[in-house]
Length: 132
Image 1 (cartoon, rainbow, N blue to C red):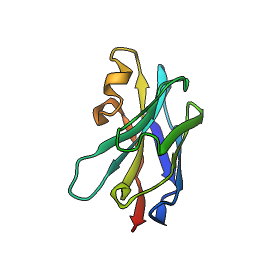
Image 2: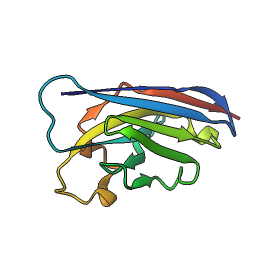
Image 3: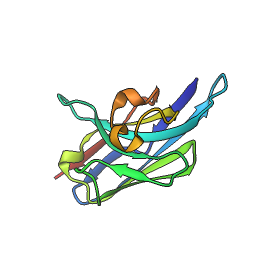
Image 4: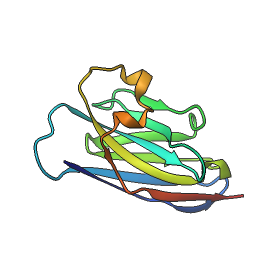
C-alpha cells in the first residue's frame, strides 16, 4: 500500500505561478516494480484530466497539450514529485491530484500515462484557483 500526499495548492492571479509537491510513502507491503508518479486535475463538471507524468527513473516527461510549455514535472527520487506551474490562467483552476502507480512495462507509457486507471494510488487533492 502506498500513501500519496500532495501539497502546495492555493489561489493566484492569472500569469502567476504555483509549485505543487507530492510524496509517495510505502505504508505496508513491498512494492515491486518501478514506481511512477503523475499529476491530474479535475474542474467542476469536467472529467479528470492527465496533466503530466514522469517515466520511472525520470528520463522522460509527458504533458497534456493544454499545459505543455507552462508546467514542468520533476522528481527528487521515485517517491517525490513536483509540478511547477507557470503562466497560470483561469482555465487551470481545478482540484489537482498526485497519483502513483507501479510500471511493469506491460503497456506503452507514452501512450497511456494520462489514463487514470494506470495509477493505483491517489492523493486527496489540492485546490488551485486562478483568478483573472
